[in-house]
Every structure is written in structure tokens, then in C-alpha cells.
Length: 69
Image 1 (cartoon, rainbow, N blue to C red):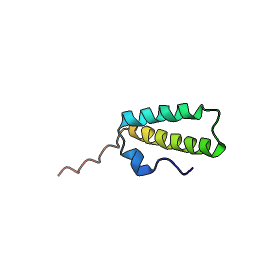
Image 2: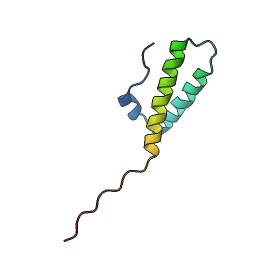
Image 3: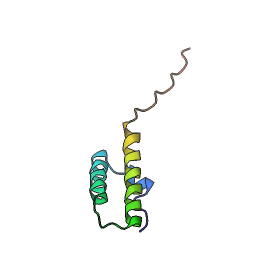
Image 4: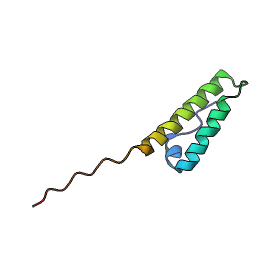
């Protein structure tokens, strides 16, 4: 099984879709019948989704002020 999501696809999704996807991945990981490679890919996908969500929670850095003349 190849990786499910790529960086560009995840960043293109709205936050509510990412949150829904995170929950879906968590539920899928609860399946006892998963093969180890499937479980590893689901974990990687979940980590990618959570990284995007964490990045969106960080406030943007303040812009440097222009020098006054």
C-alpha cells in the first residue's frame, strides 16, 4: 500500500475536512484485521494530517515594522 496523502493534497483541504479525516483514520486504526503495512501507512497518514492541523493553529509571525522616517 502506498502513502495515502501527499503534502499538497492535505494543505488544500479545509480544516473541518482535515478534522473529519483525522477521526476517520483513528477509527480505521482500531480495526484488528489490519496488516502491519496498512497500519503503518494509516499511522503515517494520521501524522501528516495532524502536522497540518498543528501548523494551522500556530499564529502567523508578526510582520516587521517599516522604519519610520
